Image 1 (cartoon, rainbow, N blue to C red):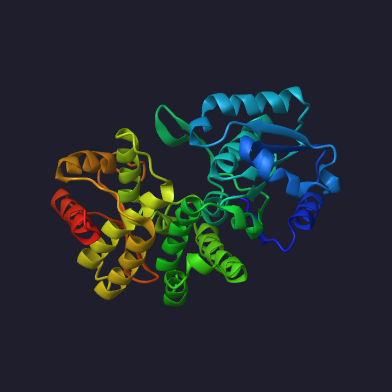
Image 2 (tube, rainbow, N blue to C red; image 1 turned 90 degrees about the horizontal axis):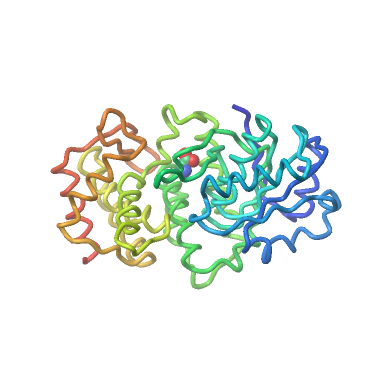
Length: 353
Ligand code: GLY
């Protein structure tokens, strides 16, 4: 798999002009959703290389991350004269970068694409690492390919207008990167104060966070081994996310991951000797900034069934990524039903459900 260039921009227009010049093309297509068309595209005005670009606008949010939207993008590419030498620029959150990356990677057997993530979640996770795809048959990211962007341009100026909930949703993935990397990065993440943001410090932290992901993806692009480290918090987190959706009270992905981390750090203490004081410090941060996802013991069987259906499992055995300490990763761990229920009890006691 090709590697991708991730740039922490000093000026988005210049970085984009440079990235476009590096990638020979005959025509540029810019994919936006209705929000980024209105709020983010104006920031690219004045980039000469986009003068004749064709914009494709899709509906926003996860509900549009489907085959119908994908087909509409292929259709626009086809009708508006895209060739094998055309280039796509995906400007948006994870939904746009995932779907746009998949559309580009499959159109005429693959054209190059550049990601410009506009949310924190997309900057530190979705837009980096080459996972592309759509939801299908009621399942998230069921169809897709590993296919990295040629460049990912991270412009943290977009974060100035991000609402709190989307900010913390992305921040949960940063917290995960802290836990799987170094005590220093983890500690700086826990001490960050959303109330008085220093944007220069935030930019530096985003840069360090992306680097954690890039290093792991570089080592294991196809998730055969160490890339599973990035699944920390996600086995329980995805179950919370799906339960919330089934009960018609959807939660943002990062919130589900943060709550999932509570259970998976508990499992880490129990099974791989993660220090209790570090678990308590991390949970205090989550409790303060993410509030609580509520469920009672009647939901345990449903949550367990959801974990059993996770696509990371093999032969029905629930797969966890756990930690021995900060940065000491234990992939391919499992836990029996009784222990998982104990972790769900622990969550409710600790979070005060
Ligand atoms: N979001 C986890 C990964 O890219 O592997």
